[in-house]
Length: 228
Image: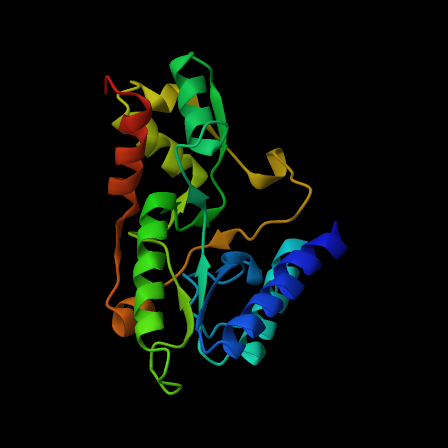
């Protein structure tokens, strides 16, 4: 629903940023790789041209614009491919299906920066603490837009699934996982084929680099299959 998306992601974000500014408080605003169209062959940097493909992406981009105007002391964080161990989400689902012996059909032509939710949350809290400490400094170099995701090379959903199955000791993953294309599994909202993010600016300005996504997904997978 386009109206609801903009009400939440643009209007809600603007209201929070404005209220924070009135109280002299910085805002940390979460955004998404979906502000890009995915046609760039390499990971996206913060200054790349934005061109969202979906209502969601357009509403998040509008939120970014309004947050910048409403509160000059802002940290906007774009992230990519968040996953967790929450039941019913991608990783628990594919591991459960693999354990049941199902053949998995996983998209291999989309690439992104897999981001483990606990790693992201810890980093956001650290950034928020730094932002609050710098709240009286309007010219602080901390303010701005950053990309945040687990480090490591871009991965496809297929590679992410294969790594998770391997870590969970679900043997012969190549026989269980079939690579398919986005066209084989269409979604209601178009998604960028390249959703990989360059996080170099975050490291330079905030001194933060999340661990390699392969280490993170291995930890997550083993927690879901304790015998692994």
